[in-house]
Image (tube, rainbow, N blue to C red):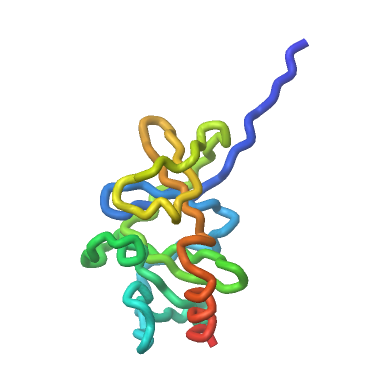
Amino acid sequence: MMEHTTAAERKVIVFQLRDEEYAVSVDQVGGIERLLPITRVPQTAPFVKGVINLRGVVTPVIDLRLRFGIEETDHTESTRIIIVYLDDIEVGLIVDVANDVIDIPEDQIEPAPEVVGTIDVDYISGVAKVDNRLLILLDLQKVLTHKEVEELKEIEG
């Protein structure tokens, strides 16, 4: 009798920056919001856009394009803020488009090559090819350093 085993899968949210597709694990995501008014915070890194008031919670927002050294663009109807959990704070990530939620079989995830597009390989936990799409899996713990997270906590108050 054949054992029927299903490969472990990772459920991810796929989003776009410029023409590249990125993915973050859904268990790190608190929600996807339309662009909300962002209040600037002085003396923060350029990629820290400021804070939003999300249902009474002050949430720092960072522009992933700037974080990854991609040129800034005007926000559009499809611009989204993905709310993610980093350590014990919530952070909003501004992305061009939040595409969909998909399951990636773990066996289709490969280690990050030396170079993926323009983004620093340090932020990447792997890449996956899914139906002719190349998804870059982000390691959220590395997107912001511990020091940066601490600074965001201070903003959060």
